[in-house]
Length: 456
Image (spheres, one colour):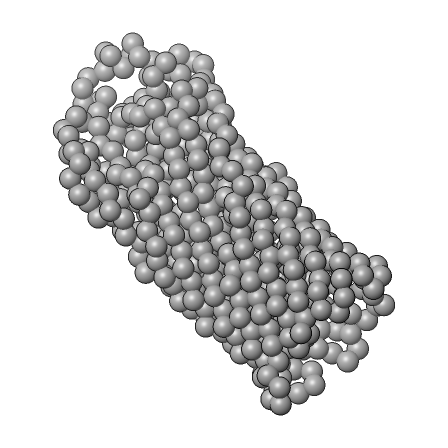
């Protein structure tokens, strides 16, 4: 059964009905479904996404604390990433390295009317494997001064999917009825040289320029205008699968208060990371060269935190975080432009609440755990622009433990789970939502982390 969206009804037709349709109707129908396919293809992603496409934390310790660190600095990676002012609360000299092995589980299913009173429905799994996400951190108090220097290098965000063409799933049916195979990849590394000054025995402030390198590839590249260079009446989108690298820059500031009574407070602001436009070498339908361009920045993040260390062997903390997707290039716009190109992700800004605790079991063993809760940046009205995008997980669990070999060497282990979440809504087209259609994204995530810390 072949599926087409007609310009007048928005419902699919059977092969027999299609054959009897006027040529102009068949062209419009194919074009509309091609545009719909483009909507989905641009926003295929999320292999390492947890809070939107932003990682919930960095490194084995911070992930084990569900990202809590703004006012509870217990490891250099978490402190450098979430609050540069807090690194004065760490050991005077520490080096840390972690590796996270991240596995998403993502399924897209879709339903469309078959034109005879029934429905066609299918489900397809993303075939993406395990992603490796490194993190490195170094903190050193400059002897004889009030300054502490830190350096962090973290994988902080990303996405990626690998959906095969699927003749049983309306969304992934081979073109021109669906959009066939879809793949994408986004990876972002952030470097944070950090300078923090101790103002008095309680207060410290820090700042850091943020230097970012990212790589993006998308096939097909529906952020570009479709073309019909071969004149067959079926416009198509070029591929941006060759990928491109881009550099981005921003900054971060933070303040940290360490109380004498065990109460700590922290606040930080990380600016929008402004990237150069991603540019891709592509070709049109007859193989002539095209240059594609997509502008996508990384959103600003504001964090507030509280920590308490007044109980024997316990460290307790909570973070409240805001990620400003709604005012970030690449995320704030929605829908199609006049040429049929998809304009943006149409993501909402989100709030995140994370709570965590750490307990020193003995002089050698420490255990930790945390939970985080956030809204999805994608809702029913925008899922049609984000069909394969797994930026929908709302609840996360973090667990971890540390073994102290001695005063200088520590082994960190961690585990995180993103609880299954689903969002469903209609298939979108330039004419609006397709009547009777439904697409649903379901995702969960798991990761295992291992790291080492060296005090000196």
